[in-house]
Image (cartoon, rainbow, N blue to C red):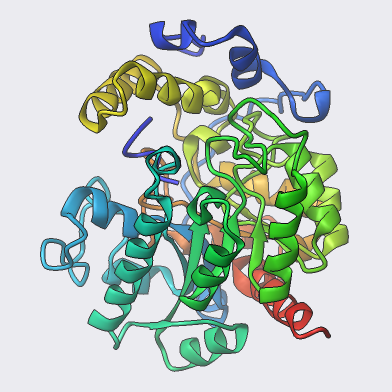
Length: 429
């Protein structure tokens, strides 16, 4: 999700957050999934920058890197009026301008990319969520059509392998938030027909059928309609995405789904205590389900101290939307001030691999991947500033003793396997 467009070691609660109901603040700032008291990992001394070796680069090039979540389509909409004329992604941009462009995608060895067709949760109240999502899907298709030598739309796992074999980047579509279907199974089917191959069940807000990780729970997980949504996604062959949802919603989705479930851009709660991350009990359920947790790169979710500071980010933005009557300019200005008052540490590529390591230890090597959230986040770890930087992850995995086959699973083979199995379930196999 786009945190860049909205977002001292001691947490200071801004005035807006102070007006939130005490229950919301308790959930946003201190509550731990499942009621467990998580333990803070011991601090580490500063680690030296990673140095790429020829062996790591060889392993990286030989793999199929599939990133689970990139918000370039939203950046193009919010910053460039959804105009590809105004933003030339064939040229290299500075990371503070864009984190994604074609030269750096090539440099990073990206073979497949789930492009997020995110629209804000507030569009649900405005009644424009489906329309705006359709426009974002159209924007992804415009990108693919404008640069056919680089991108091709992928609808199946076989498409991904074929497109990558042709030296292009397989472009998949992920819907970020069940608010996009506006409580309509028919709309869900329409999004699938247009190319969507996963849907995140919620975004920042609890829906009428599913609880979000960053809002007050209303259903204890999924409602009966929410379970129907999961079953229909299985029938279609669309991956169920449990990023952004509450632990109870994660558990319900994993209970109901007959196909592997993914978390397209989430990390390990045991390493960094933020509600956007996945607790260990759910990691074990993901393993039993055959699913994949794709590690997010946002510093506010992966760096332990930063995760504590950012714990109430969604609640604060929700309050600012109320304060300023959803006036985007005023809300963004208020969020900018809030971020300045709550500086966070970036972490490093080592921090991200700590999350990978933990998921491997709890769920197994077959159940972890990468979901960067590039161009949707305001800060990333050192040596993970943009889409050119994935080889540093390969190098750090190699340095920690992972073998080539294991690294290739993490880079993309795991999520490709999950997509293929979702297709098998849809065919009744």
